[in-house]
Length: 147
Image 1 (spheres, rainbow, N blue to C red):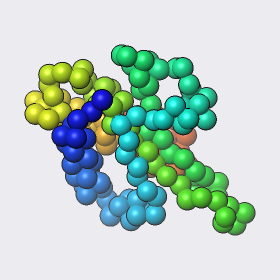
Image 2 (image 1 turned 180 degrees about the vertical axis):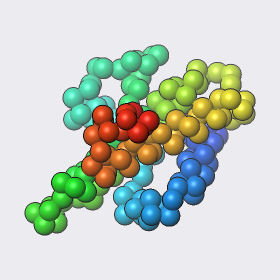
Image 3 (image 1 turned 120 degrees about the vertical axis):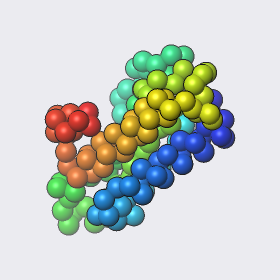
Image 4 (image 1 turned 90 degrees about the horizontal axis):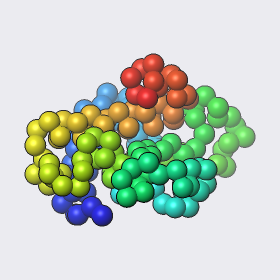
């Protein structure tokens, strides 16, 4: 379980990454909420068909992010009553992928290499999910370095 300080550190990095995005992407994020949770819920994993496929220590999932909705190129007037798209980022899986072991280096006082790895993973995950919103598939995102 993450501490409030660890959550705040993660969120501060995310805020800086969003502030550094090109203006057109920042405007797009005003239309697509970015929801940040520690981990995906069991219900979410079940709906995605990945329940029980946890690969991280302690049985945690390594699902770092999720775009939920209909990609822009697939939208039509028939989708006018559909709930708006959402992007989820999951702190703990992102931190694990970035090399955090739950101990030193601590997200509350990270050492520089780990802090850079965390920022890089947050950025990749956010851009990956924004890519899905714009209709890119997994191969497209991999080709762009966001796989």
